[in-house]
Length: 281
Length: 293
Image 1 (cartoon, helix red, strand yellow):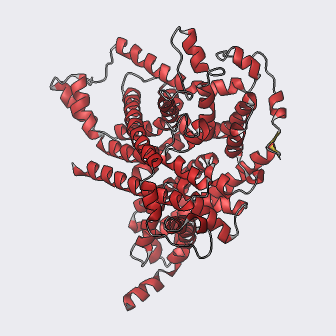
Image 2 (spheres, each protein chain N blue to C red; image 1 turned 135 degrees about the horizontal axis):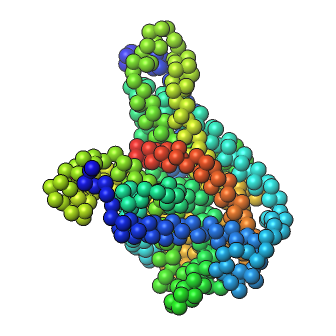
C-alpha cells in the first residue's frame, strides 16, 4: 500500500464541499441565464433568485425573431456558415503550412515565415482594427463573408497542434515512402494525413469552438448587421438603450447552447487539444 | 547561391503547400501590423489618404504626455498584476484539489464545470455577468440581501468595478490555466512524493518542496499567457463597463479603440504600438524568468 493512497474521511469531505461550491458557482450563471430567458422583466425584478421560472413560456423566442432589422435566423445561419467555413479553411491551410515548415525548415524563407507568424499572434489583435479595416478596404473585402472567413482562418493553437504532431512523426516513415518512389504529394495524402486524422479532428473541434466566439473581427469587417454572427448581434442588443432583459438572456442562450453541447460531447478531446496546443506555445 | 537555387527547386512542392498559409499570414497579420506602425507616424486627419503627412514621433509624444493615457496604462498594469495573481492562484488551487486523491468520484464533473466558461463565447458570458451584478435584476445583490450581508456595488461603483470585472474574467479564463496545471500534474514523478512521505515529510512539505518545483513549466506558460491576456483586456470592458465609472476600467486597449472611434488614428495606432512593445517585453521577460533556473 502506497503511503499516499489513503485519504482521511474528514479531509475528503472538505474537498468535496469545496469542489462542489466552486463548481456550482461556475455553473450558476448558465442556470440564471436559462431561467432569465423564460421570465419577464417584471418577474425578474421582483425575485432575481428564483431557481425555476414562473411558467415555461417560449414566446420570447418569437419576440426576438427580428433584431436590429435582421431576422434572428440570419444571425444563426451567419454563425454556422462563417464558423464552419473559417474552421475548414483554417484546418486545411494550417495543416499544409505546418507540414511544409516542419518537413523542410532549411528552405529559404521558411524560418522567417514561422517567425512572422509568431509575431502576428502576439500582437494585441483588437488593436489591428484600423489596419485590418484598411486592408479589407484595399482588397475589396469589406462587408463580405470572404473577408471575415479569411481573417478568422488562422490561429495559434491550431498551428502549434499540427506542428507538434508533424514533428513527432518518425523520419523513417517518410523515408520509407520516398524509397518506394512516392511523390511528396502522395506521401502527404497517403501516409501523413491518415496518421494525422485524430489531431485533425481535435484541431477542427477547438477551432470551431474558438471561431464561434469571435466577435471583434466580424464587427470590424461587417458593413451592416447582415453579416453579424450571434455574439455580435448579442453585443448590439446589449448596447441598445432600453433594456430587453429577457430578450438578451434568450439570445445569450442561443449563442451559448450550441458550443456548450459540442464541448460536452467532445470534452476530452477539446481539453487535451487546448492543453497540448498551449503547452507548445 | 547555386545550392540555394537547387534547394528551392527541390522544395518546390513545399512552397506550394505553404503558399496559402503564407498568404493569410502576410495579408491579415504582417501587413496590418506594418500599416498600423506606418499610421502611427502620420497626422490623423491624413492617415487614411493615399499620401498621408508624416509627423515623425509626434503621435508618440502626444500619447506619452497624455495624462489620461498615463492613468489608463497604470490601471492596466495594476489590473493585469491583480488578475494574473488571482487567476493563477485560483487555477493552481483548483488543479491541486482536483488532482488529489481526495476527489476520486465526480472529478470529471468538477473539471467540466470550471472549464465550460473557457469555451463559452466571452460576449455571452460577460453579458450574463453584467446583469448578475445589476442592482435591481441581479442575483448577486439579491443573494447578499437574503443572507443579510451588505450589498456589492458591482459595476456602478468606482470602488468595486475592478473587482467585478476581475471576477467575470476569472470565471471565463481560470479554467484554461487550471487545465495547464492539471496537464503538468499528470506527468509529474509521483515516486518522489512517496519517497518524501517515507522519509517523514508532511503533506505541506511534500507539496512545497516536491510537487511545486515540478510545476515550473506550467507556471511559466500560465504566467506568460495570463500576462498577455490581461494586458489586452478588452471584451469585458466593451460588454460590461464601457471604461467607466470615472474611467476606472478604461484600460489601454479600450482607450485606443475610443481614439480610433474619434478618428484620432495616429494616436490610436501609436498607443497600439506601445502596448505591443509592453506585451512583447513582458512575455519575453517571463520566458527568461522561467528558463533562468
